[in-house]
Image (cartoon, rainbow, N blue to C red; front, side, top):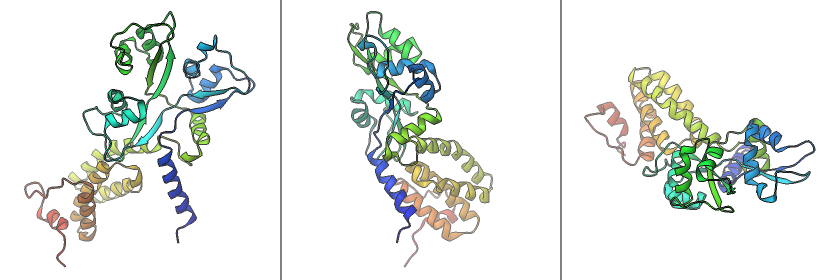
Length: 304
């Protein structure tokens, strides 16, 4: 019988998968609130009040006044776990509205649109901020105001399919916000506003994947330097959070553990590591030039 904790964790995993496309959080205006104070609470930056203005169409209503009980959308990034069959174009269509936005989505996650996203990777999904054009606006001024760089005007032009078309008052320009770090209050509000997120703030898996990716060279170095005990300890620490890692990361860890276990004369563990490596990486080749006989033996299925 499964323990209550295990059932809870499994339930959270299933619900989180359903909620992976959850978006911004909602703030109900309280006494004493201002747009600046709300921005500081959730972002730690009062300058981000302009995001609240745009996200809630306050400029279109003739000003930026807010009233008690008013529900405000607070922009935040969402997160999505990549499946093996996903492409950047498919993800951009589903999450951002158009396949040509794959370049922004992939670059926001340290990749390129022509490279396949890593199976199991948790990616950050930009927030599409709708900006209503005024008489004083141009694509350059909007890039400066919301992206902090007028040279990124071309990004907005491409993202919105403008093809250098001149903007007119009343037009809507979508600004993909790719960096929106939240304060602790902001992270808690994201979790509280969507019970499907369970106890884990969105983005934790992505952060874990980044940390492991940064440490993988150290694991490889341990093995190359003959620090096999250290390699086993490091590799198993990575595997303790295996549900959060990408398929490629897991394959890399098991490949290094294969070598460490073989060197430590632990054939059973070496066989298990190799079996996982081959299962996760369908392109494994037991090359006699690059692999020792001891490693190849660990990877050969035992004869019944």
